Image 1: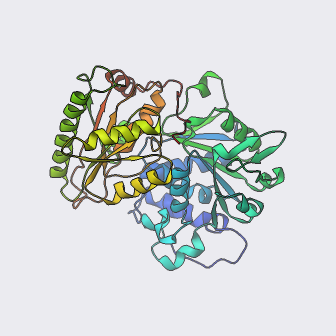
Image 2: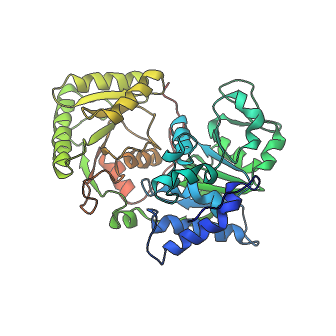
Image 3: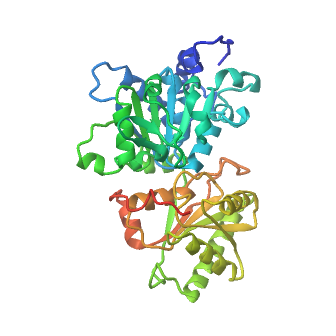
Length: 426
Protein backbone atom coordinates (compact mmCIF):
# COMPACT_ATOMS: atom_id res chain seq x y z
CA UNK A 1 0.00 0.00 0.00
CA UNK A 2 1.36 3.45 -0.91
CA UNK A 3 1.07 6.26 1.60
CA UNK A 4 -0.26 9.79 1.23
CA UNK A 5 0.38 11.98 4.26
CA UNK A 6 -2.82 12.98 5.98
CA UNK A 7 -3.58 16.23 7.73
CA UNK A 8 -5.70 16.29 10.87
CA UNK A 9 -8.52 15.44 10.78
CA UNK A 10 -9.63 12.83 9.66
CA UNK A 11 -8.23 10.05 11.83
CA UNK A 12 -6.19 7.16 10.36
CA UNK A 13 -9.14 4.74 10.39
CA UNK A 14 -11.24 6.97 8.15
CA UNK A 15 -8.36 8.31 6.07
CA UNK A 16 -6.80 4.92 5.26
CA UNK A 17 -9.91 2.73 5.57
CA UNK A 18 -10.68 2.35 1.85
CA UNK A 19 -7.04 1.63 0.97
CA UNK A 20 -6.70 -0.94 3.76
CA UNK A 21 -9.88 -2.67 2.63
CA UNK A 22 -8.83 -2.76 -1.04
CA UNK A 23 -5.31 -4.00 -0.21
CA UNK A 24 -6.43 -6.87 2.00
CA UNK A 25 -9.44 -7.84 -0.11
CA UNK A 26 -7.06 -8.20 -3.05
CA UNK A 27 -4.92 -10.62 -1.02
CA UNK A 28 -7.67 -13.25 -1.13
CA UNK A 29 -7.23 -13.63 -4.90
CA UNK A 30 -3.79 -12.20 -5.75
CA UNK A 31 -0.27 -12.90 -4.55
CA UNK A 32 0.09 -12.10 -0.87
CA UNK A 33 2.00 -8.98 0.13
CA UNK A 34 1.48 -9.44 3.88
CA UNK A 35 1.49 -12.30 6.37
CA UNK A 36 -2.18 -12.03 7.32
CA UNK A 37 -4.15 -15.27 7.17
CA UNK A 38 -7.09 -15.56 4.77
CA UNK A 39 -9.50 -16.26 7.62
CA UNK A 40 -8.48 -13.00 9.32
CA UNK A 41 -9.33 -11.06 6.17
CA UNK A 42 -12.61 -12.96 5.75
CA UNK A 43 -13.60 -12.14 9.34
CA UNK A 44 -12.86 -8.46 8.71
CA UNK A 45 -14.86 -8.39 5.47
CA UNK A 46 -17.86 -10.08 7.08
CA UNK A 47 -17.76 -7.61 9.96
CA UNK A 48 -17.71 -4.70 7.51
CA UNK A 49 -20.64 -6.21 5.59
CA UNK A 50 -22.64 -6.85 8.74
CA UNK A 51 -22.38 -3.31 10.07
CA UNK A 52 -23.10 -1.89 6.61
CA UNK A 53 -26.47 -3.68 6.70
CA UNK A 54 -29.02 -1.09 7.78
CA UNK A 55 -31.52 -3.86 8.61
CA UNK A 56 -29.29 -5.68 11.13
CA UNK A 57 -31.18 -6.82 14.23
CA UNK A 58 -28.48 -5.94 16.76
CA UNK A 59 -25.38 -3.78 17.05
CA UNK A 60 -23.52 -6.55 18.88
CA UNK A 61 -21.52 -8.99 16.75
CA UNK A 62 -19.36 -12.00 17.63
CA UNK A 63 -16.15 -13.21 15.99
CA UNK A 64 -15.10 -16.64 17.23
CA UNK A 65 -11.50 -17.65 16.54
CA UNK A 66 -9.63 -20.35 18.50
CA UNK A 67 -6.63 -19.34 20.56
CA UNK A 68 -3.60 -18.90 18.33
CA UNK A 69 -5.75 -18.12 15.31
CA UNK A 70 -4.81 -14.45 15.00
CA UNK A 71 -7.48 -12.70 17.03
CA UNK A 72 -5.18 -9.75 17.78
CA UNK A 73 -4.60 -9.20 14.07
CA UNK A 74 -8.33 -9.00 13.45
CA UNK A 75 -8.66 -6.49 16.29
CA UNK A 76 -5.85 -4.38 14.83
CA UNK A 77 -7.60 -3.93 11.48
CA UNK A 78 -11.25 -3.76 12.58
CA UNK A 79 -11.28 0.05 13.03
CA UNK A 80 -9.93 0.53 9.48
CA UNK A 81 -12.51 -1.81 7.94
CA UNK A 82 -15.30 -0.08 9.89
CA UNK A 83 -13.82 3.41 9.24
CA UNK A 84 -14.36 4.12 12.92
CA UNK A 85 -14.37 7.57 14.44
CA UNK A 86 -13.11 6.65 17.92
CA UNK A 87 -12.52 3.17 19.30
CA UNK A 88 -12.58 1.75 22.81
CA UNK A 89 -11.01 -1.67 23.30
CA UNK A 90 -12.00 -3.50 26.49
CA UNK A 91 -9.62 -6.10 27.86
CA UNK A 92 -9.99 -8.48 30.82
CA UNK A 93 -6.51 -8.02 32.32
CA UNK A 94 -3.42 -5.84 32.55
CA UNK A 95 -1.41 -8.45 30.64
CA UNK A 96 -3.79 -8.34 27.68
CA UNK A 97 -3.96 -4.53 27.85
CA UNK A 98 -0.17 -4.40 27.47
CA UNK A 99 -0.29 -6.79 24.50
CA UNK A 100 -3.06 -4.82 22.80
CA UNK A 101 -1.17 -1.56 23.24
CA UNK A 102 1.81 -3.15 21.50
CA UNK A 103 -0.45 -4.53 18.74
CA UNK A 104 -1.67 -1.03 17.88
CA UNK A 105 1.82 0.48 18.08
CA UNK A 106 1.15 2.35 21.31
CA UNK A 107 4.69 1.62 22.51
CA UNK A 108 7.36 1.39 19.84
CA UNK A 109 5.66 1.78 16.48
CA UNK A 110 7.94 -0.90 15.01
CA UNK A 111 6.42 -3.50 17.38
CA UNK A 112 2.94 -2.89 15.97
CA UNK A 113 1.08 -5.69 14.25
CA UNK A 114 0.93 -3.64 11.05
CA UNK A 115 4.72 -3.62 10.76
CA UNK A 116 5.25 -7.19 11.97
CA UNK A 117 3.01 -8.69 9.27
CA UNK A 118 4.42 -6.49 6.52
CA UNK A 119 1.34 -4.37 5.91
CA UNK A 120 3.32 -1.20 6.57
CA UNK A 121 6.78 -1.91 5.20
CA UNK A 122 8.52 1.41 5.83
CA UNK A 123 8.98 2.45 9.46
CA UNK A 124 8.74 6.05 8.29
CA UNK A 125 5.06 5.51 7.38
CA UNK A 126 4.10 4.05 10.75
CA UNK A 127 3.66 7.30 12.64
CA UNK A 128 1.04 8.46 10.15
CA UNK A 129 -0.76 5.13 9.87
CA UNK A 130 -1.05 3.91 13.45
CA UNK A 131 -3.77 5.35 15.70
CA UNK A 132 -3.07 7.70 18.56
CA UNK A 133 -3.43 5.12 21.32
CA UNK A 134 -4.01 5.43 25.06
CA UNK A 135 -3.89 2.46 27.46
CA UNK A 136 -5.69 3.73 30.56
CA UNK A 137 -3.68 2.90 33.68
CA UNK A 138 -4.08 6.03 35.78
CA UNK A 139 -6.95 8.28 36.74
CA UNK A 140 -4.86 11.21 35.47
CA UNK A 141 -5.44 9.95 31.92
CA UNK A 142 -9.22 10.02 32.15
CA UNK A 143 -10.14 13.65 31.42
CA UNK A 144 -8.65 13.69 27.93
CA UNK A 145 -9.18 10.13 26.61
CA UNK A 146 -11.58 11.43 23.97
CA UNK A 147 -8.72 13.13 22.11
CA UNK A 148 -7.21 9.73 21.29
CA UNK A 149 -8.20 7.66 18.26
CA UNK A 150 -8.15 4.47 20.31
CA UNK A 151 -8.42 3.80 24.05
CA UNK A 152 -7.68 0.49 25.77
CA UNK A 153 -9.13 -0.06 29.24
CA UNK A 154 -9.59 -3.04 31.56
CA UNK A 155 -13.27 -3.99 31.58
CA UNK A 156 -13.05 -4.77 35.31
CA UNK A 157 -12.40 -1.07 35.93
CA UNK A 158 -15.79 -0.27 34.44
CA UNK A 159 -18.69 0.31 36.83
CA UNK A 160 -22.28 1.33 36.21
CA UNK A 161 -24.23 3.28 38.77
CA UNK A 162 -26.75 5.95 37.99
CA UNK A 163 -24.67 6.70 34.91
CA UNK A 164 -21.76 4.93 33.20
CA UNK A 165 -18.36 5.44 34.75
CA UNK A 166 -14.88 4.00 34.62
CA UNK A 167 -13.27 3.77 38.05
CA UNK A 168 -9.57 2.97 38.30
CA UNK A 169 -7.86 1.10 41.13
CA UNK A 170 -10.46 1.99 43.72
CA UNK A 171 -9.82 5.70 43.18
CA UNK A 172 -12.47 8.19 42.22
CA UNK A 173 -11.14 8.95 38.79
CA UNK A 174 -14.20 8.80 36.59
CA UNK A 175 -15.13 9.41 33.00
CA UNK A 176 -18.20 11.58 32.69
CA UNK A 177 -20.98 9.85 30.81
CA UNK A 178 -20.99 12.17 27.80
CA UNK A 179 -17.49 11.16 26.75
CA UNK A 180 -18.77 7.70 25.83
CA UNK A 181 -20.86 9.27 23.07
CA UNK A 182 -17.67 10.03 21.15
CA UNK A 183 -16.80 6.32 20.76
CA UNK A 184 -18.63 4.68 17.87
CA UNK A 185 -16.79 1.33 17.94
CA UNK A 186 -16.31 -0.93 20.97
CA UNK A 187 -14.09 -4.00 20.64
CA UNK A 188 -14.33 -6.53 23.48
CA UNK A 189 -11.38 -8.93 23.72
CA UNK A 190 -11.68 -12.32 25.48
CA UNK A 191 -15.45 -11.88 25.45
CA UNK A 192 -16.19 -15.25 27.07
CA UNK A 193 -16.52 -13.17 30.26
CA UNK A 194 -19.82 -11.88 28.87
CA UNK A 195 -22.58 -11.93 30.26
CA UNK A 196 -21.04 -11.22 33.67
CA UNK A 197 -22.53 -8.01 35.09
CA UNK A 198 -19.63 -5.78 34.06
CA UNK A 199 -19.92 -6.87 30.46
CA UNK A 200 -23.72 -6.53 30.42
CA UNK A 201 -23.28 -2.95 31.63
CA UNK A 202 -20.84 -2.27 28.81
CA UNK A 203 -23.31 -3.43 26.17
CA UNK A 204 -26.03 -1.28 27.73
CA UNK A 205 -23.85 1.81 27.65
CA UNK A 206 -22.61 1.34 24.09
CA UNK A 207 -25.66 -0.23 22.46
CA UNK A 208 -25.92 2.59 19.93
CA UNK A 209 -22.39 1.96 18.65
CA UNK A 210 -20.79 -0.99 16.92
CA UNK A 211 -19.90 -3.62 19.54
CA UNK A 212 -17.68 -6.50 18.41
CA UNK A 213 -16.97 -9.42 20.74
CA UNK A 214 -13.97 -11.64 20.05
CA UNK A 215 -13.28 -14.91 21.85
CA UNK A 216 -12.21 -18.50 21.36
CA UNK A 217 -14.85 -19.77 23.75
CA UNK A 218 -18.25 -18.01 23.89
CA UNK A 219 -20.12 -18.36 27.16
CA UNK A 220 -23.18 -20.66 26.83
CA UNK A 221 -25.14 -18.28 29.06
CA UNK A 222 -25.48 -16.00 26.03
CA UNK A 223 -27.62 -18.58 24.27
CA UNK A 224 -29.44 -19.72 27.41
CA UNK A 225 -30.55 -16.19 28.20
CA UNK A 226 -31.44 -15.36 24.58
CA UNK A 227 -29.06 -12.40 24.53
CA UNK A 228 -29.11 -10.73 21.15
CA UNK A 229 -25.67 -11.23 19.59
CA UNK A 230 -25.10 -11.95 15.91
CA UNK A 231 -22.40 -14.48 15.04
CA UNK A 232 -20.45 -12.68 12.32
CA UNK A 233 -17.65 -15.18 11.79
CA UNK A 234 -16.46 -18.50 13.19
CA UNK A 235 -13.59 -20.82 12.31
CA UNK A 236 -13.02 -24.22 13.91
CA UNK A 237 -9.86 -25.37 15.67
CA UNK A 238 -9.56 -28.30 13.26
CA UNK A 239 -9.39 -25.90 10.29
CA UNK A 240 -6.53 -23.97 11.89
CA UNK A 241 -4.67 -27.21 12.70
CA UNK A 242 -5.14 -28.47 9.14
CA UNK A 243 -3.71 -25.23 7.75
CA UNK A 244 -0.72 -25.32 10.11
CA UNK A 245 -1.78 -22.12 11.87
CA UNK A 246 -1.89 -23.73 15.32
CA UNK A 247 -0.28 -26.88 16.68
CA UNK A 248 -2.06 -30.19 16.82
CA UNK A 249 -2.44 -31.57 20.34
CA UNK A 250 -1.17 -34.73 21.99
CA UNK A 251 -3.08 -35.44 25.22
CA UNK A 252 -1.48 -37.35 28.10
CA UNK A 253 -3.73 -38.46 30.96
CA UNK A 254 -2.65 -37.92 34.56
CA UNK A 255 -4.18 -41.23 35.60
CA UNK A 256 -1.10 -42.03 37.72
CA UNK A 257 -2.03 -39.15 40.06
CA UNK A 258 -4.69 -40.18 42.59
CA UNK A 259 -5.74 -36.70 43.77
CA UNK A 260 -5.13 -33.94 41.24
CA UNK A 261 -5.41 -31.27 43.95
CA UNK A 262 -2.86 -32.95 46.24
CA UNK A 263 -0.03 -34.40 44.18
CA UNK A 264 2.42 -36.48 46.21
CA UNK A 265 6.18 -36.04 45.93
CA UNK A 266 6.53 -39.38 44.15
CA UNK A 267 3.77 -38.50 41.69
CA UNK A 268 5.31 -35.09 41.00
CA UNK A 269 8.73 -36.63 40.41
CA UNK A 270 7.17 -39.08 37.95
CA UNK A 271 5.40 -36.21 36.18
CA UNK A 272 8.57 -34.08 36.07
CA UNK A 273 10.45 -36.95 34.42
CA UNK A 274 7.74 -37.29 31.76
CA UNK A 275 7.71 -33.53 31.16
CA UNK A 276 11.48 -33.35 30.78
CA UNK A 277 11.47 -36.28 28.37
CA UNK A 278 8.77 -34.69 26.19
CA UNK A 279 10.34 -31.22 26.17
CA UNK A 280 13.76 -32.61 25.25
CA UNK A 281 12.15 -34.59 22.42
CA UNK A 282 10.53 -31.37 21.16
CA UNK A 283 13.92 -29.62 21.29
CA UNK A 284 15.27 -32.38 19.04
CA UNK A 285 12.53 -31.69 16.47
CA UNK A 286 12.95 -27.90 16.40
CA UNK A 287 16.54 -27.39 17.43
CA UNK A 288 16.81 -23.62 17.84
CA UNK A 289 14.03 -23.29 20.46
CA UNK A 290 13.93 -24.11 24.19
CA UNK A 291 10.43 -25.55 24.53
CA UNK A 292 8.67 -24.76 27.78
CA UNK A 293 5.75 -25.79 29.98
CA UNK A 294 3.07 -23.95 31.92
CA UNK A 295 1.61 -25.65 35.00
CA UNK A 296 -1.77 -24.62 36.44
CA UNK A 297 -2.04 -25.25 40.16
CA UNK A 298 -4.55 -24.29 42.87
CA UNK A 299 -5.80 -20.73 43.04
CA UNK A 300 -3.72 -19.15 45.83
CA UNK A 301 -0.39 -17.46 45.20
CA UNK A 302 1.24 -19.64 47.88
CA UNK A 303 0.21 -22.76 45.93
CA UNK A 304 2.12 -21.50 42.89
CA UNK A 305 5.18 -20.68 45.00
CA UNK A 306 5.10 -24.05 46.78
CA UNK A 307 4.70 -25.99 43.53
CA UNK A 308 7.64 -24.09 42.04
CA UNK A 309 9.83 -25.02 45.02
CA UNK A 310 8.80 -28.66 44.66
CA UNK A 311 9.70 -28.73 40.96
CA UNK A 312 13.05 -27.09 41.69
CA UNK A 313 13.84 -29.72 44.34
CA UNK A 314 13.68 -32.37 41.61
CA UNK A 315 16.79 -32.67 39.49
CA UNK A 316 16.12 -31.61 35.93
CA UNK A 317 13.87 -28.78 34.80
CA UNK A 318 14.15 -25.31 36.35
CA UNK A 319 10.84 -23.70 37.36
CA UNK A 320 9.53 -20.27 38.28
CA UNK A 321 6.08 -18.84 39.04
CA UNK A 322 3.98 -15.94 37.83
CA UNK A 323 1.52 -14.00 39.97
CA UNK A 324 0.23 -10.45 39.66
CA UNK A 325 2.79 -8.81 41.97
CA UNK A 326 6.14 -7.26 40.95
CA UNK A 327 8.06 -10.47 41.67
CA UNK A 328 5.73 -12.41 39.40
CA UNK A 329 6.18 -9.89 36.60
CA UNK A 330 9.97 -10.16 36.89
CA UNK A 331 9.67 -13.95 36.78
CA UNK A 332 7.52 -13.68 33.66
CA UNK A 333 10.15 -11.63 31.84
CA UNK A 334 12.88 -14.07 32.86
CA UNK A 335 10.79 -17.04 31.74
CA UNK A 336 10.51 -15.57 28.26
CA UNK A 337 14.21 -14.64 27.98
CA UNK A 338 16.04 -17.43 29.84
CA UNK A 339 16.19 -20.75 27.98
CA UNK A 340 17.16 -22.57 31.18
CA UNK A 341 13.82 -21.80 32.87
CA UNK A 342 11.56 -24.45 31.38
CA UNK A 343 8.49 -24.39 33.68
CA UNK A 344 6.16 -21.54 34.62
CA UNK A 345 3.72 -22.30 37.46
CA UNK A 346 0.54 -20.20 37.50
CA UNK A 347 -2.49 -20.20 39.75
CA UNK A 348 -4.74 -17.79 37.87
CA UNK A 349 -2.71 -15.17 36.03
CA UNK A 350 -1.85 -16.04 32.40
CA UNK A 351 -4.64 -18.57 32.00
CA UNK A 352 -5.72 -16.42 29.05
CA UNK A 353 -4.16 -13.99 26.63
CA UNK A 354 -0.48 -14.87 27.17
CA UNK A 355 1.40 -15.27 23.88
CA UNK A 356 4.68 -17.20 23.97
CA UNK A 357 5.14 -19.76 21.22
CA UNK A 358 8.03 -21.38 23.12
CA UNK A 359 5.36 -22.77 25.46
CA UNK A 360 4.52 -26.15 23.96
CA UNK A 361 3.18 -28.00 27.02
CA UNK A 362 0.37 -27.33 29.48
CA UNK A 363 -0.10 -29.26 32.73
CA UNK A 364 -3.30 -29.02 34.79
CA UNK A 365 -2.73 -29.88 38.46
CA UNK A 366 -6.09 -28.91 39.90
CA UNK A 367 -9.74 -29.70 39.41
CA UNK A 368 -11.25 -27.07 37.14
CA UNK A 369 -14.97 -26.45 37.35
CA UNK A 370 -14.95 -24.45 34.13
CA UNK A 371 -14.53 -25.86 30.64
CA UNK A 372 -13.93 -22.29 29.45
CA UNK A 373 -10.95 -21.96 31.80
CA UNK A 374 -9.63 -25.33 30.60
CA UNK A 375 -9.97 -24.24 26.96
CA UNK A 376 -8.25 -20.93 27.63
CA UNK A 377 -5.34 -22.52 29.48
CA UNK A 378 -4.81 -25.21 26.85
CA UNK A 379 -4.56 -22.38 24.34
CA UNK A 380 -1.32 -21.23 25.94
CA UNK A 381 0.68 -23.98 24.21
CA UNK A 382 -0.84 -24.33 20.75
CA UNK A 383 0.65 -21.25 19.07
CA UNK A 384 2.89 -22.21 16.18
CA UNK A 385 6.47 -20.99 16.52
CA UNK A 386 7.59 -18.60 13.79
CA UNK A 387 11.18 -18.82 15.06
CA UNK A 388 11.82 -22.20 13.45
CA UNK A 389 14.84 -22.32 11.15
CA UNK A 390 12.68 -23.83 8.39
CA UNK A 391 9.07 -22.65 8.51
CA UNK A 392 8.11 -25.27 5.91
CA UNK A 393 8.81 -28.02 8.43
CA UNK A 394 6.02 -29.05 10.80
CA UNK A 395 6.14 -27.57 14.27
CA UNK A 396 6.07 -29.80 17.36
CA UNK A 397 2.80 -31.14 18.73
CA UNK A 398 1.47 -29.39 21.80
CA UNK A 399 1.41 -31.71 24.82
CA UNK A 400 -1.40 -31.49 27.37
CA UNK A 401 -1.27 -33.29 30.73
CA UNK A 402 -4.63 -33.14 32.46
CA UNK A 403 -7.79 -34.88 33.71
CA UNK A 404 -9.31 -37.23 31.15
CA UNK A 405 -12.86 -35.91 31.62
CA UNK A 406 -11.92 -32.30 30.94
CA UNK A 407 -10.07 -33.33 27.81
CA UNK A 408 -13.02 -35.34 26.49
CA UNK A 409 -15.32 -32.32 26.91
CA UNK A 410 -12.74 -30.12 25.19
CA UNK A 411 -12.60 -32.51 22.26
CA UNK A 412 -16.39 -32.55 21.97
CA UNK A 413 -16.52 -28.74 22.24
CA UNK A 414 -18.64 -28.89 25.40
CA UNK A 415 -18.63 -25.63 27.32
CA UNK A 416 -20.01 -25.11 30.83
CA UNK A 417 -20.39 -22.03 32.96
CA UNK A 418 -17.12 -20.33 33.91
CA UNK A 419 -16.26 -21.14 37.50
CA UNK A 420 -13.37 -18.84 38.22
CA UNK A 421 -12.08 -16.97 35.19
CA UNK A 422 -12.46 -13.60 36.92
CA UNK A 423 -10.65 -14.48 40.16
CA UNK A 424 -7.49 -12.61 41.10
CA UNK A 425 -4.35 -14.25 42.39
CA UNK A 426 -2.93 -11.36 44.35
